Length: 231
Image (tube, rainbow, N blue to C red):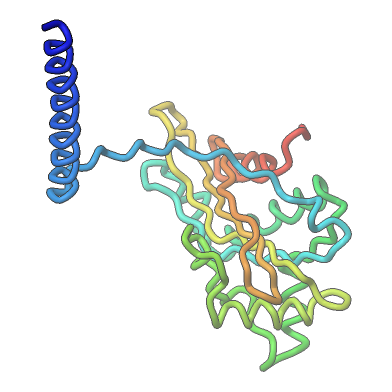
């Protein structure tokens, strides 16, 4: 009698587990078919990736000029950012100056050198200020698309001594307001890529950030974040 009850209990238990698993699998399949999936975990802001100076040490790297700078209206920085040509030039100067001072192991060729190279090769070299570098702010890009890729290759071959293998491209600079303090504080989000000028591959990408009560202090802090460990 005891053996019979044990066999019945074991059989009922296994059958219950089997039915439970079938129901669970059926429910999961139904949820997938109906599109009921658990919401993705929201991703927080990623930390700035340090500039990979070890990989480009001793090499010439061309630094492209800015073509896209924008700010939220709530910052009320129209006065500081009103003259586009002046703003782009000042942003270029801040980036190149800080790169040369904080990463001297790399031979940085700034926008002025690129403009001189383009001036000496009319009809061959592209105008550095008219290149579509802002397209590289798209995170999904892994290879620089044409015609920008061929333009980078041509410009890199003409600038400096013997050409440059890599291009440092500030793809976009966007200012966003943080908090409600007065004067308003802005967060600079500087999207940068490091591209191989021969293959077009984007080997490094980051969004450097920095806060400030004016565009230039925020940009300075963003660029400094590329070289952590320095004041």
